[in-house]
Length: 128
Image: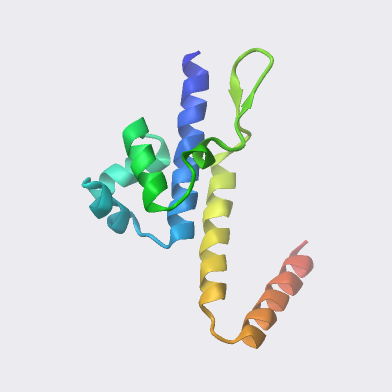
C-alpha cells in the first residue's frame, strides 16, 4: 500500500504545480499566502513533502478550484493500487505548456497570438 500512497502524493504534487502555474502564482506568492517558505512549496511540488488536507483545501480556495481537481486522473487498479500514469517528463511538459499558454494569452493582439500559434504548430510539425 505504501507504493500506492507515494503515487497519489506525486499526482497531487503535479496537480499543485499545474494549478499554481494556471493561476499565475510563483512559488513565493503561494508560499506567502499559505504562510510557509517557498522551499516548502518546492517540496510539495516535487513530492518530497505531503500536502496536508487542510493546506490542500486552502490552496483550492486560493485558486478557486474544487479540491477534487487534485485527484482527477487517478485510477484505482484492479489490484487496489493507484495508477496515475504521470511520469516526471509529463510533469515537465505540462509545466512548460502552461507557461507557454499564459504567455500567449497575455499578448494583446489576437492576430499576433494566432500567428504565434501557427508558428508553433508549423515548427512542431517540422520537428516530427
